[in-house]
Image 1 (tube, one colour):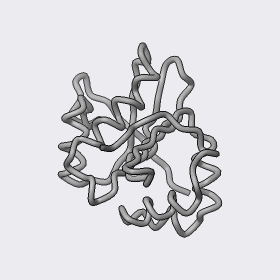
Image 2 (tube, one colour; image 1 turned 135 degrees about the vertical axis):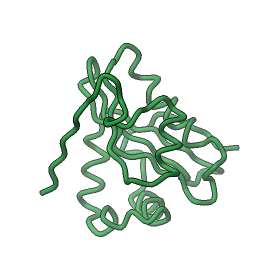
Image 3 (cartoon, one colour; image 1 turned 180 degrees about the vertical axis):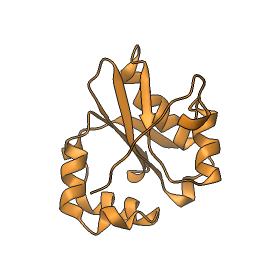
Image 4 (cartoon, one colour; image 1 turned 180 degrees about the horizontal axis):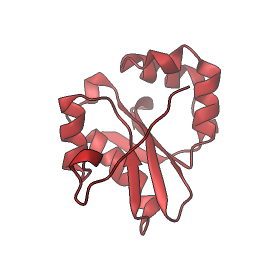
Amino acid sequence: MVQVSVCAAEDLERTEVLELYGAVGWTAYTEAPEVLIRALGGSHRLVVARREGHLVGLARSISDGATVVHVQDVLVHPDEQRTGLGRRLMDELFAGYEGVRQRLLLTDDEDGQRAFYEALGFVAAHDHRPPLRSFVRFD
């Protein structure tokens, strides 16, 4: 059975983190492992999933803890996808944010991801009523 729990970044092994990010194809993170490890350490909340001790999922957020939370990463190993694990990770992540009204995330424009996040109650900014506008800048 997969165990889902809140975790401190320092409790994660660098190699297992890189293996998980690599397994889902997030090479922008694995090409700069020092930056990834620093980012994990700067997360407001970090939730992991383990099967028999092996890291198979991770979700992390950035937040002020009161008014806004940004979901930065949600990863589920390909062997564990479509099992409900992504939802479990998100449920545990948001368990620390009762009362926080703004829950944001930025993701790739893929139908599968859209369906996943819509099933969790998220709405694409351009579909929200009243209309919302979102901005992003990549340097």
